[in-house]
Amino acid sequence: MLQMSSQNVDRSVVGYTELLKQLAQQPDYFLAALTQDGPCQDVSRKITTPPPEQYKTIEHYFKLGNQTIYINLTTIINGDKCSIDSSQNLGNSMAAGLLTRLLIHNTHRGDLPCREIYLVNMYIRPRAAYADTNQLLQDLLTKCNKKLSKVIIAWDLSASSALWDPSNLETVNRARTTKAKYYSTKVIRGNILERFIIKHNLKVLQPSPHLLLLDHTRVKATYVNRNQEKPIKAWIDVIIVGSKASRIWQSVDIRGGVADREHRIIAALCATNNLRHDSRLSNYRSVRYKPDRICKDDFIEPKLKVAKTRNNW
View 1 (cartoon, rainbow, N blue to C red):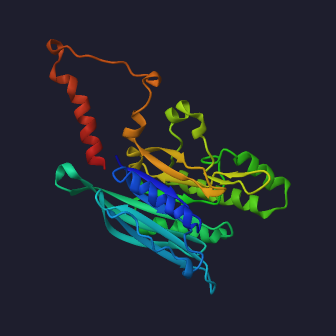
View 2 (cartoon, rainbow, N blue to C red):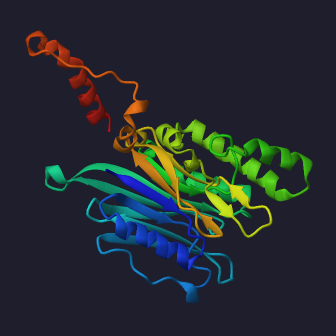
View 3 (cartoon, rainbow, N blue to C red):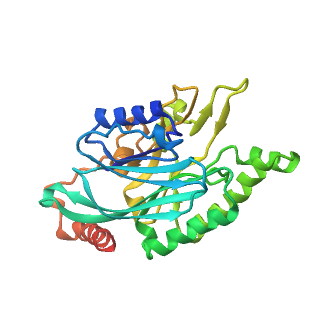
């Protein structure tokens, strides 16, 4: 299973510690964990706690002007499952990204690399100009070198669109009726990102349908602030995949929810996770073949599909 998780720990020591606990508890379950915008408000608060032994860490700090404020993008890779081929920075200190090319290993083939993935960790500050967002997207196009179909992006968007935000209509109405620039900025930035996603045939992963049916409480906002009189909820953290990467990762599960102010963990579930669900929800019939009625033509179409999938990757 190649499950991946993403979380903006938001300069929180506690959030980063909880993420490491998740990795330690499920060492064979996670392919990678990504942290965005933290945990580094300034150099003196840099976290030095290492991840579990089998994980490797790539990180980069984007300094904002002459101030001691940083965006810290960290990618934590399970070294038992994949190896790091290369990494590059994207954007600037207002809209930043970290692009990592990974080689996924197949233990059944003597640990030979059998698939490449472009893992991207992105964060856009709420105050970022539209030009910063456009620069980040252009850098992604340039450095991915026409490999967007194999990309998986963990993104704190600070934007609103109907593609990922259930409260998008409310945000649009507030942008029209209030003078607060915050809402109009979220909507305009959302439109920029939405056009990019559609134009390049990317897919925003949604909560798995069978998880929603089995447990409606899994429908959660990706960010919650309970320190207000009326708790603030937002859907600003997403996982986006290319057309080929969507064959592996097909849905997400939003987890966590104990702190007063936090970004929740978003787990990208692979296809095998989606098939493990309650038999009551299955629409597939059980089929039994009788040996005396099987002919070789019955297996031609499945063989062709398997060969096509393998070659297209």
